[in-house]
Length: 353
Image (tube, rainbow, N blue to C red):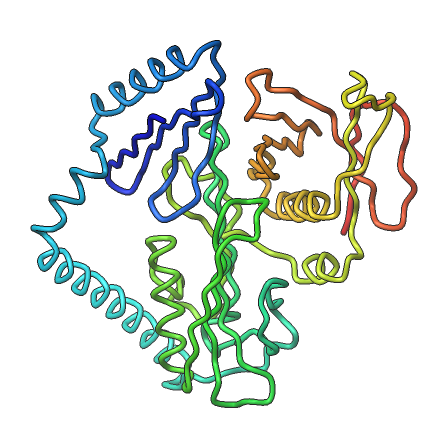
């Protein structure tokens, strides 16, 4: 079996050839994340391995380095790298602290919790019973970050929340969930016995994800992102969220999604077929997000082995894993409404959650 993993900066590129079949698997993405996987099948193992080696050669020609070489160099740089990382973390903490102190001054020198009036929704994958923290002069500590580059097949997310444990005035948790859109992803929980340190950690996590200081504004206003175009670099951007729609998603009272079959795949008759529960919930979430973040109508969703480019504007899904790039029409059934069973056509009705 041929296998080679390369890195360049924060990106990795892995190529492998299966022993069982002449298939080349290429995975690429950011170090520390799952990445995007593509497969290509050949007639013989020899052709597959030749293609894999040529791909590795092309990548090393543009600056990618085998992991083994990086590991050897890292052994000589461990102490220097550790010191540099400590300095970077200290600088992030200092910037966050300065920004928070500016917010304190604008609010009259205090930095305390406020009544959030039910704002913010604890992530459904979070096991903690509690409420989202809202801070005077800063706002609700509930952030959704997205890294979306449809042309590269990249769609990652970070959920970042500061939660106060139910019934405990001195127990706070910085909750983070991150991964590939369509998957649950990874989860971390950092517990604190005081608000100040929890807020500082929340700010550091935000800085690491976006490259921007938190709070983003010096004014005494809640944090609110502005709908912008998807990132053209590999950075994350903050999305605007609607709490009522998020609660509807969590309760199951949300729209459903269907895909059109007219090629008799798997022996299916021509007609509309429902997404499974997880797929419908993910697509509905992305649809609701696109209503507030109008440039995010193209998303990449990982579902099992396959990745799909979902275009919410044209109502299509394209399998970008298969070489054939099979495209199908999709349709939304609003919650409580009957499904329009007519063949695919443009629908421009105003949808709501």
